[in-house]
Length: 424
Image (cartoon, rainbow, N blue to C red; front, side, top):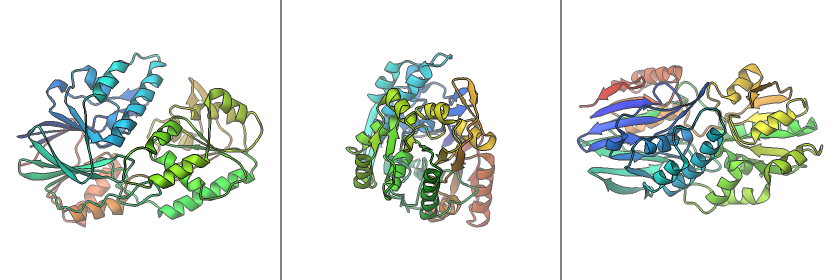
């Protein structure tokens, strides 16, 4: 068995792992990465010979290269849950719309998105399946709606790919509870060098920051990831009575409406209740009217890393207001506006630099397992071979060191891009 890391190798982004075994040639995710000069894609040769693509979840760093490779000849089953298919379609359509406005030509067309959607083979959790000659099972990964942990039988070995993993219950999602011992574990390492604060503590600090922002008589602007984080944030906000309205903006409002009728392992009723209590922003004109009205409000809007979506409008219109607050709610990848705003105090919108003078703070509402949760998951699954992906150098090296010293794992791999790992 050969494992080739085309992406997510000592980096967070463009997840794409190839496995060649006696059962066939398979891809685990096919994502992209937000680089300083635009999107970065994995390099997969002869995509037309891939037997199956297993999509762990819909986030673009796991799904964003699908239309590119569909254009290049990929024509296999794309195995995913129904929620993942629905969310993937929305994110790919939105991504294409944004890319089409740029100066660089998009390397595929919109039909490639719809052609790829026809290839989806839908699965349900806790069931066994066979595609081609490969047997597999799938389980809730606890990350976002539809996110899946895959367990394969390859060359007589039990191989598990976690995708993005969360073993802690959140307001929105039930946790991953997979317990089986495995031969090969391919696991994400985003937080391989640090733990999260307890979820309730993070939420309390966040809600206190909202209160303080309103006490300064300014607006509270909350950039959120479209999937997972946006739903969790409106659920948290609706636990309290506020003196101002909560507005919901961007792709998240359409997605949440569709998620109400979706199928995922989480708190669907709580999400639907929160959605019914927020006010929806109806386009640019409505947004501008509200921001120019002088009336305070809480605005929950995409995108979470300030890379696109309505949040750019909020930056342009509010950056001079010292009373406003921008409360970031998740991981900010290097090179994104969110990371630049935190570290350097500015953001680039429409090729112009904006230096917001408002209050800025980040809260660790992670949908990923922290260090000790990752170690606990590795300890419970007892892998003979451990492959660490989807983390930066520091996170991966630290997790590898602790897995070796504390858990006595002998075969640990921390591959670079295009590295081949042979498992015998």
